[in-house]
Amino acid sequence: MRRLEGKVAVVTGAGQGIGAAIARRYSQEGATVVIAEINEDQGRETTRAIGSETGGAVLYVRTDVADPKSVQTLHEQVRRTHGSVDILVNNAGIAVFDEPLSISMDDWHKCMSVDLEGVWHCCRTFLPDMLDKQHGAIVNIISNHAFSVIKSTFPYPVAKHGLLGLTRSLALEYADKGIAINAISPGYVDTPIADWAFNREEDPARARRETEAKQPVGRLGRPDEIAAVAALLGSDEARFMIGENIVIDGGVTIRMYE
Ligand SMILES: NC(=O)c1ccc[n+]([C@@H]2O[C@H](COP(=O)([O-])OP(=O)(O)OC[C@H]3O[C@@H](n4cnc5c(N)ncnc54)[C@H](O)[C@@H]3O)[C@@H](O)[C@H]2O)c1
Image (cartoon, rainbow, N blue to C red; front, side, top):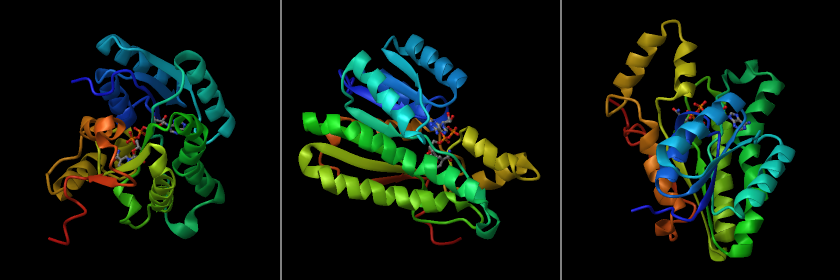
């Protein structure tokens, strides 16, 4: 079943990792997909690869979600090419990890501007069209840092806690207007951002082995495991789910201690 047939979906940060997996899955499910990605080479390459794999319509628009003007340009370009958007996946995110009193204000702002404000820029830009149609879905990719904290990963969890609040606030506000807004909180997923975190350690290979061993399932998650749930949340089958945050973390958050 191609459950996103006829839908137009924007996926931010879809040049690689989880976003690319969501874009690929959405295209397989029949959606017209817009890859809104800051890294032009990566964005174009992923757009080409998905388009040739699925034969579906895939468009690349260079986008910096932290810049409202860039999001406005994305909106105009998508409207011109494909009309109004049915599904917005706010996936673009960056990891800024530090000890609270060591972080510069620049790094604080960088984290907030992408991980929290970037999602808001996209929501406030695409929501009016969805409200006109009284139909739409927004899927925010958060993290299990939205409710648990690891020391010295500041201020990433601050932004992700905020994003959970943003998801719930908007979800309730527009629940009776045909808009379903939900979130997915992945645990450790094997993507370039995970590699980046391991590479900060003295022995990256060892850090990876140790992290894998700490997961109740004994491995990291795969991007396609997040994409499968994102396909459900973007579809018309999940319209009674409002403001939910689905945790996909291999069991990490349900474990008390060993
Ligand atoms: N990988 C994990 O373990 C993990 C766990 C929990 C949550 N997440 C979240 O999932 C999302 C995707 O993570 P990932 O692991 O695929 O990351 P990634 O770094 O592999 O990919 C993120 C993509 O977003 C793009 N991007 C960054 N800033 C952008 C901006 N300002 N505008 C547009 N695009 C931008 C990057 O160029 C990149 O292509 C992020 O929000 C991240 O916080 C990831």
